[in-house]
Length: 123
Image (cartoon, rainbow, N blue to C red):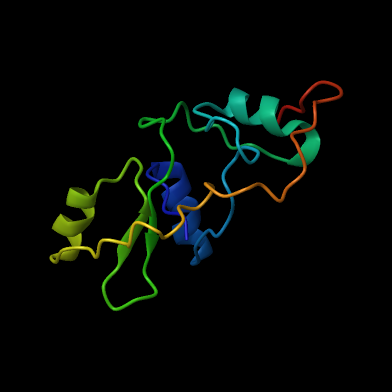
């Protein structure tokens, strides 16, 4: 579940009454985009629309939390810190064992990034 920190995205989710479960707006192994132009350049014609809410404030990977256990744990640190999460939750997060793989750290089973052929579409 993705939780954006932008008033337009939050208003859309509120109006929709649901959540967002989606991959990042970049291809596997590429740097996270921080502007709508980065997304358009990266994904070319693979998306129909890019909502431009301005540049990202954080500009780092998302924090990934495993909330399937009784006590959640961070699988990948990102813009939201352990301290931030613990302050909101009111209890300490579990520490995953060192042998637990971090999402995106294993061998890729996806095709290599394809080059854009043509101009990105403007929405």
